[in-house]
Length: 434
Image (cartoon, rainbow, N blue to C red; front, side, top):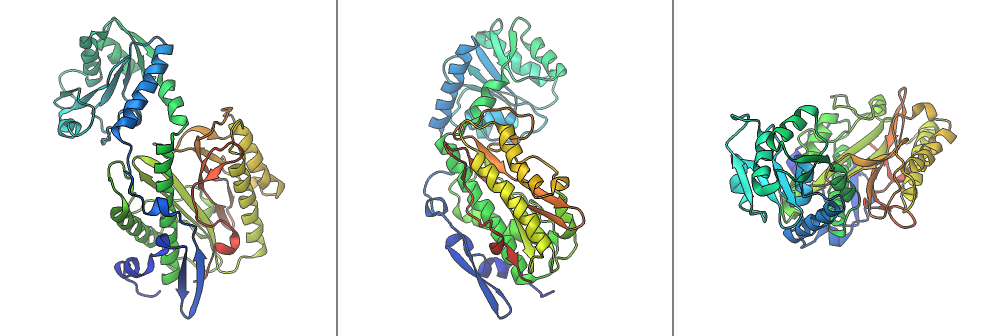
């Protein structure tokens, strides 16, 4: 294998994200890879996180839903929902951190002391803190005691559906309150993304696409590399790019040094393969699977490749996967039923004669969590609404050969899904010579 320097590679090789095409070399041979970048996403001057006014508007939307349920308040303990409603990013640990949303007015936060200095930098000015965990009294109970002391001790309070032990502590903290499971309020609001959220998802897709390109170029320059080498090089590349281009760093997610999945050969038939030190060789199927997060919002970019000229069998497998992918993306439209989109997608694989190589659903919701509802899967009867966001990732996996899977991040449209990724998907663009 040629000797390589990752720093030299990163300095000289990774230019694809800034232009519409890049030349990739293998000895004396070269070929052009076309990437359809979108300048407003590449060189934006906008914030890369949602701003306080967005969260104030979101609080008002939650309060409208609370009024319909006759709730006096909501208490949120799930970190993702605290972030969604208040924008307060934090590192979730065993220490409870909660948001109180009253039926009118601004929210309050209940935090461990180690968060207090950060809280003071954000727009939510009403907060109370406890020293540390576990402390002399259960900290979930402590949160509800603080809520009760604010005049809500006999109120009707919405909570996120808790475990029995957590429910016990909530009730001990406010014994006269009526606690009502109301986590679906936040969940349903999160399903449909607003334009500012979609902007951040698009930014994430741009960086995820770049990670795929970085991995591809690394392979093209260095030949028979191992999975862990691909992962380390791509993680460095996308981290450097995000550091240069992002305007805010709160809520950015870069997994490293071994984030993503890059299985090849027979291991590409493992949908969730862990890294190995096997070496890439001609004839291998290869999946480059990456995600990125900007402002807390996630996107995926996964692409299936063939190393060297594809065999007829590889083409048939690839074409079945691609037909399923395209069918699912087109089917993600207003009024469609989630499980119907899944069935029509996977039927493309069944019709091609590869049903035994199906391992999973066609997609899942994506947003503040990389996997969230609704699900493009059998059993989910959700009616799709415009501006829901999903992964589109049907795959075909032959354990005796390998697997093929693309994943795009798709926004539900009126007539069909709108793919946010711009990386190519056709087989002729996905052949790597080493």
